[in-house]
Amino acid sequence: MGISSDSASLLISAVTTFLMLPSIGVAMRMMDIAGRRWLLLTTLPVLLASLIILVLGNVIEMGTVIHAIISTISVVVYFCCFVMGFGPIPNILCSEIFPTRVRGLCIAICALTFWIGDIIVTYSLPVMLNSIGLAGVFGIYAVVCSIAWIFVFLKVPETKGMPLEVITEFFAVGAKQAAAAAKTN
View 1: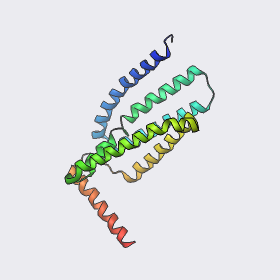
View 2: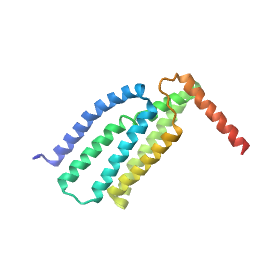
View 3: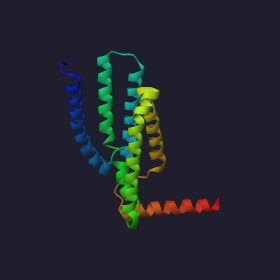
């Protein structure tokens, strides 16, 4: 294209950010129309497909330009889908599922957990890159993405259109049933 690698990197970052903004708008609208669970179940497979393409792009020999194009498109698609589903929805669900009397503390614990997870990913990435390479890292992330989809499918209920009191009661009943089942075993 005739631009330096630093300029190309800056351009790709700007384009990615520019494309993420409408994705956030679509997500805000779709959360109320289709629901949080549906949005997670539909964006997680796209995240998984992007990661698989990144794995294959790093395993299969291809030209440098084609590799760069495929990798860039995959990363942009990944980011756009992440900001639509798996980025914001766990935070939204955390703010909905806890009783009002402990909601603030529980949201703080959830935020702390997210930040600890972020720190683990950030600091383990260079170590994993040195030991298993980029394809291996993307492969691990793909496995985690698959596990997340299974968890959402099996355990995350739809909360669209439900008042906070109903959601809180729903989770309280589930917790009471789990506690009763644990006592009988």
